[in-house]
Image (cartoon, rainbow, N blue to C red):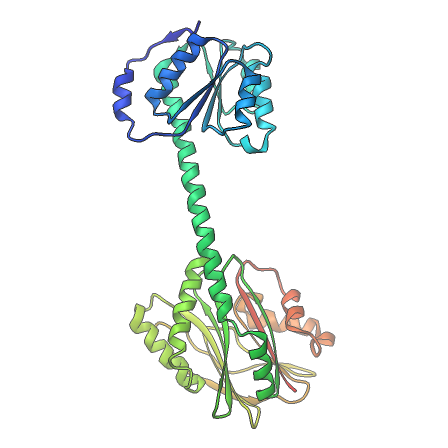
Length: 383
């Protein structure tokens, strides 16, 4: 029969403190009196339902059909003792994280260590202090409830992330749009777009105008993950209303609108390139973005354009104009490539001078240091 020492707190007082029903408990003990005491204790602790098994073998049969939030396991039982039962429970992948509380009258350190070595979450020594035992049961059940809530939250977040990722992907130019822009501009547009998490803050877009030009935009919103994606979507929504402007005017207007929208709280790096169809001329303006690089047969030059990130209301535009010659390429990227550092980028490209003329955007991306940031890299070449 179970031996107990009742604590100062009564079961009635404890029951009043239980505000909500918790998960089920499985009691495994060959003594029916012990099971009755533990059953009442679990009710007082707020357990949702209580299952009982008379030995380890019966417990394993029950666990094949159900998954309680806590197992109370006696160590001395016929057929299969508590330590062996615990080891068998842990061998089942469904129950690797389910808490198992072992009760034992064997108080020696070796027995307690053996319990933990075989997967016990907690060990209590008989005679039981009921107030302490009740508190331990409550803590384990509360922890399992919190874990379930966290898992449910994670499932909801996974759904939201998947939907947001689909939305972000839908905003990227499809292959037929890229091909149409290449034909119109007589430039190849080679792109690598990667996110460091499920979703990111990089977006790029193409807008071809009937007046004979195509606008290429690369935006990199501040932050990572979901927050960055939301910021990128907000910026894209603003850009869609002003995309007919020349690059310098476009970025100035975007800076003004973002500042009015969030008063400096939403910042974004943008590179805008307008490609004239008839001449192949490129008008380039960048804000807070890595310096565009002009890659030639024998040298690499920084394109003199740039300014503060947009959203502060302090942007001063500086636009560059150039025309790509045969064998030249223009590289623009987000700061996920070489940390956005033009010196590091040039050093890397110089070290691969023999391969740079024919390198693809994917090859360039793979040459660089690995990073945990979003990465978009675009190579323009004149056909």
